[in-house]
Image (tube, rainbow, N blue to C red; front, side, top):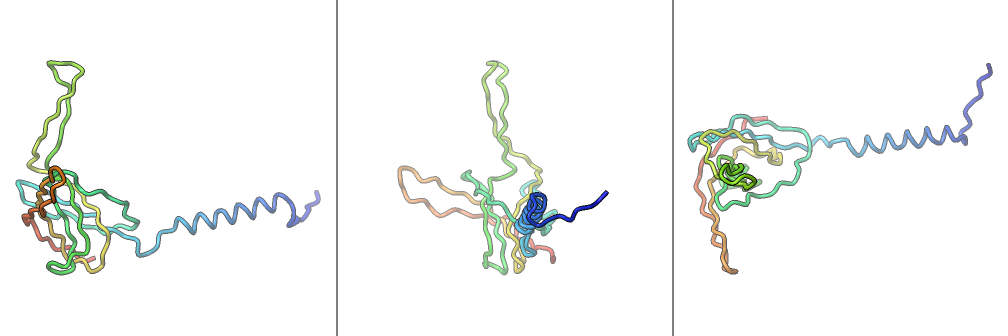
Length: 167
């Protein structure tokens, strides 16, 4: 058998080159930069007391998050020092759960019930800031404006000021 050299202009060579370029482009665009990280904070709310169970710095990009929609919510603030906010997010209270179930008296109809849990564990994702030293949590109440009236500032009650562990 005689082997023939691959000519650069052959179709096989062009497909190989195209595939190699495509692979390089995909690898270059999906690589995470070294500084793309976020906090993964695990909290526990038990009998009104809030504790930080675990804080980890995770690699990756933080996806966009929406603020809480309920009038009563929790405000999480990453601080560099006291009253030096780096990031803030308002989240619906995880201890308040809305349950839905079928009405036993009227089959096919759905009933709902709001339940207050005494012990709940939940996770908050926050952008990584190397200067963040503590997370401050407030219980925040917002009055919903009626008929175009100007909204009153939220009423905040400090729940906890927790130090973040060193990286």
